[in-house]
Every structure is written in C-alpha cells, then in structure tokens.
Image (cartoon, rainbow, N blue to C red; front, side):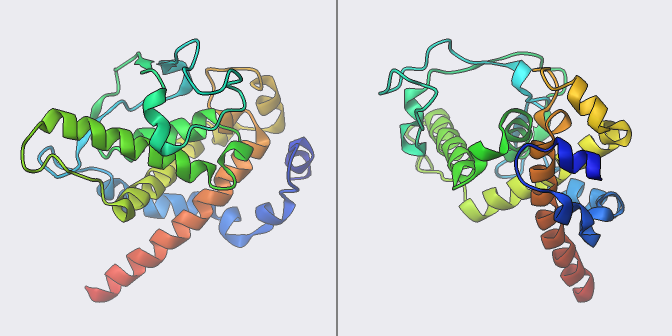
Length: 231
C-alpha cells in the first residue's frame, strides 16, 4: 500500500485504500457482476439501444488536428455542452467489438481511458457526459427527420444511471484482466503508453476511478437489496 501511496502524485490515497469496501472491492464486484451486466444488456428493439463500439479507447479515436474553437489556445479552451457542434467529427477505427448496448457504455470507457482526474473535477465529467447526450439527441432527431417524435430526448436520470453502471462494468473488466498482476512497477513501465488505459498506468487516475466505482457500487448494492426485499 505504501508504494502505491508514494507513487501517486496528487492526493494521499491511504485512507481510501484502508476503507473496508475498497479492500473488498473484488469480492463485491464479483457478487454484482451479473446484476450489472443484465442492466447493461438491452434488447435490439428496446428504446435507447444502440450499436456500441465496445473498445472505445483513446487509440481507436482519431481527433482533428486542429479544433475549430473560439480560442487559438485549444489546450485551455473548455467546450461547453451547447457548443459541441464547434468540434469537427472524430474518426473511429477497430470495430471488432461492436454490439448492441446502452449508449453510455462507450462514454464511460473512453473517459476512464483517456482523461486524468483533474479534468473530471468541478463538473468536468458531467459536462462531458452532457455534451455526448446532446450530440446523441441531435443525431437521433436527424435520423428521424420530420416525424412527430423528432423532439426525442434522452432522460437524464436514466443516462446518469447507465453511466454509473457502465463505470462499474468497466472496473470489473479492468480488475479481472489487468489489475490482477498490477504493481507500482508495472504502472511505471506503462506510464508513457498511449495505448494503455490511463487507469492502468497512472496511480492517481486509478485511485480516483476506484473511489468513484466504490460509491456507484454501493448505490447499486442497496438497489439490489431493495429488489430482493420485494420478492
């Protein structure tokens, strides 16, 4: 634990790692895996079901070399959700994992893969999710044209729920595939690898993700308990 705390460059993560729920995160994740998966697996005809990329990591997304924003310094420009149209479209590659799912699954993976914690603070994460939802709504309306349902919107509470479920599900994947053999040394060796998810090469990003997932998982554990109590 001390090695992990020392490697983090931001917060002191010792208190988080000593939390009972975090110490038992693997067991909790295993116990909730099927429940979470069921709620992230819509039918093809279900409202809101889309084709998800399935491997929406940073290396599979090619961004424009120059963003057409109102500021010449794009590194300090914050794109608000209502200005999302100012960003030229990205180009995606590697569709080997495409399938039917909920829209926020790709979003949760990409944010965890590509963005350091300080970009997600002070409402940054919420702005990114909202920008995606606005773009999704415009795309759906465009496809539906002048039909009477062309004012379709994505219910925000359901969107937030999907995002939280997708974060938990991505954490299950990361813990099972990568963190079983992770160590401060493996994080350090991968630090500069753009093809490796940030939460598997940056301690602060990993710990911030664990903290978030711990909270989401606790929320869904209570929901499952309520469901079981009604049966």
